[in-house]
Image 1 (cartoon, helix red, strand yellow):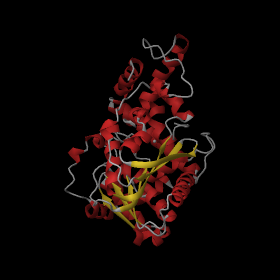
Image 2: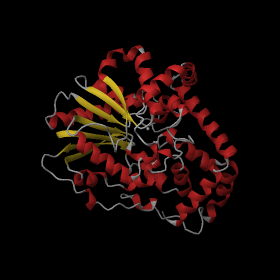
Image 3: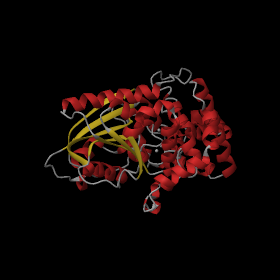
Image 4: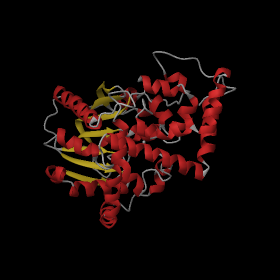
Amino acid sequence: LDPTVKAADAFVAGLFAVKPLYKTMRGVARRMISQRASAIEFPFEPEVARLESVKEELDREFESVLDAKLNMADFGYYMLPFHAYEKGNLCWLAAMEAEAATYTVHAPIYTERNDVLEPLADRRLRETFADYLAMEMWRRRVSRPKRVLDAGCSVGVSTTSLRRSLPTAHIIGMDLSPYMLAVGKHNMRFRPENKEHRRRISFVHGAAERSPFPDDHFDVVALQLVIHELPANKTLEAIAEAHRVLKPGGILAVLDFNARSKQMVKLANQPLAFAAFKSTEPWMAEFMSLPLDRALDLSGFDDVTSAMVSPRHLATIATKSIGKSPHIDDLELDVPAPELLVTERRPRPVPTRALYSPRQRPRALVDALLLVAPLRGLMLPYEAMGSQRAA
């Protein structure tokens, strides 16, 4: 990263290192999530309270899904704080709040206004993704899939969406957090609307880059809003693992942020805001610089296509080639400074001697005193880039 972003990183990290301050900002962020959830009529506080009231049942679900053979020390990137949780996704609070965070994150993505929210925006996003996937499956002559893997499924919102759109398939939701999986399993049992899905959805503890499944096993593998939460090398491993477990001719479907959307471009060229965002999404710079199409091609995939499925999200579909050998070692990874991530327009970089220009220094003082920028960064995962997205 360039010196400006490094300095911003150090400034924000210093603020967040003060535990009482971090706790205060986390509390403010949580209240904002709750307010937005109320605005879209999602019962955030009652739902968290309900899950807390069935903690014993969640503990049993946790034990039933936990793969004790998985050594979490092998997944150091997953042990870092992110999404404003000190333990990342490896805690009950993150799992209990995950569904509300998902819905509130996506509420403004189609209106592109913080004060105009769409209650069903998350469902609209996933259905648009599913429609694109269905169109590409038809074009590629993949019909009636029987086995589908939803890697990085969190509490199963994405898994249920896949099940609705692929009615012939058995969907396996896989995640590295047994806390998320326990909540997902409980919701699958508890909610009446999930009754029709219960026999066709199961949950497995595992990592996208190291799954417990045999070669050539799945017709479709989906990575929905996962790879921006992975270091670039782990993204490449996850793609390689998808290639391994897919049948020849099977489909890999990726949904994630569009690194060149105007919201991401704007964020990438504001060093302090970008640094604050990275404090909750530590691998975002690597995600933004990863050439996904090239990585898929070198990983043994063909027919790579992409489409915008929201103003901020991109869907990418690829087919496991028959007879094409992976050459992923040929891909050179680099993490450029944020201002180099823009292709359409490239604003002048902020001078490296200061985070703010002389004209902006009064605003810098206000930001520092009121903690506007760090708090803004803390809220970014919950505000889906425009109003600002880790399992």
